[in-house]
Length: 303
Image (cartoon, rainbow, N blue to C red; front, side):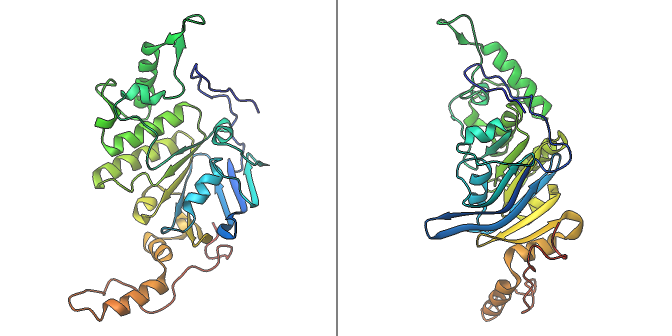
């Protein structure tokens, strides 16, 4: 397998051969410990081309740790990380990018006062002319940015407008299009709809589906089961650093997914407590039965 290195010329990596049949990225019993603190333990995950794998969990479930392992920010301390069927241990995010794995984080690495096209090529600017008088190839960067955004269904009237003037959903979509342009085969999205309203969340979900339809494997990190179910093909629920549930879309309903993520036993306790408060309607909460997921490896949930 060969890759092109992206430097100051901004060459997009497009010569990485896709995986033949198996997953592009796979975690086998992966875990991460920080000293005596075990943040992640025994997690299995598979990411296939043209599919959206949703990773759900409450705060502290281990979602951020999983992102850092797959994107090369941290190395796993147990289990295996495989890319195209071969074990790897990324030392830096650049190594992960070289294998086509790109992460779009919640806070977005953009410069609000810079134009859209400058943010699109930030750190990978196209240049022209002989050394030592090379200069930015502004016309080519604008044309490329416009084409790539339109290919993703994103139409902006003015690429000169500061990226800070775009809505949250539009900024997320620009970041997605940028990752696709620079050769991403696996796109990791860190709670892209967390700070967005209903309309803008819908815009982001639309472009997640567009990335999937272009053949990318997508890891959609979220705590919203309804957003996940709209675009997801497979669902993995983390709880306290372990895999609580692994299920394909055909094997689970959105109600069951919500219950597994929230924890039926915890909700039952909450229902009992709230029932003592006047004016609180608890009819929609589950009865006092433990409806937490069976082990991830069981026949009922393993997808």
